[in-house]
Image (cartoon, rainbow, N blue to C red; front, top):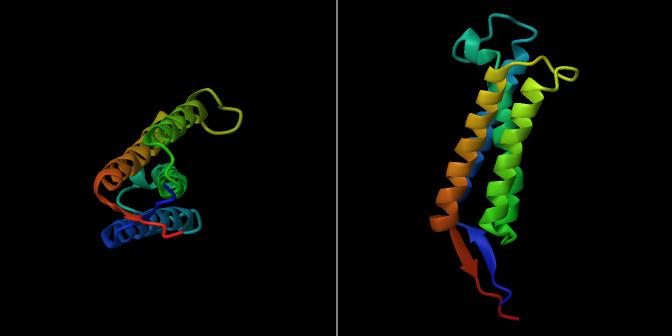
Amino acid sequence: MNDKLKPKKVTKIVYNFLILFAAILAFTRWMSVFNNDIIVINAEINSHISNFALSLVFYLGVGFTWILQKKTFHKIILLGVFIIVANILCETVMGFMNTTDILDAVYGIVGTLIGFCYFLVINKYGLEVIHDES
């Protein structure tokens, strides 16, 4: 069948909320580079929040597109595993590209896990099938 998937209204609302939330966190973090008085929650979180936001936005952006394209959920899981492994590698063994910081990797993993939980729920409850009449 050529049936297509469409996200339910609540699925789109939560998706946009998560993207906006991550964007606000990243923007706030990047603004704190110019003004040290800008702090997300506390100084510790402030220094790692960009990994959380970038991992979440990347996973949501690619994964949501793949779900609507009816890719298998196994591929969505593999994408999440790839993002987690990339976070760990970048924050441990790739010191020539980045300051090694395992807490950055942890924040990236948490962002990915939040995205995974979202995909788990919408894969089961958040999509509608559109029947193609052609």
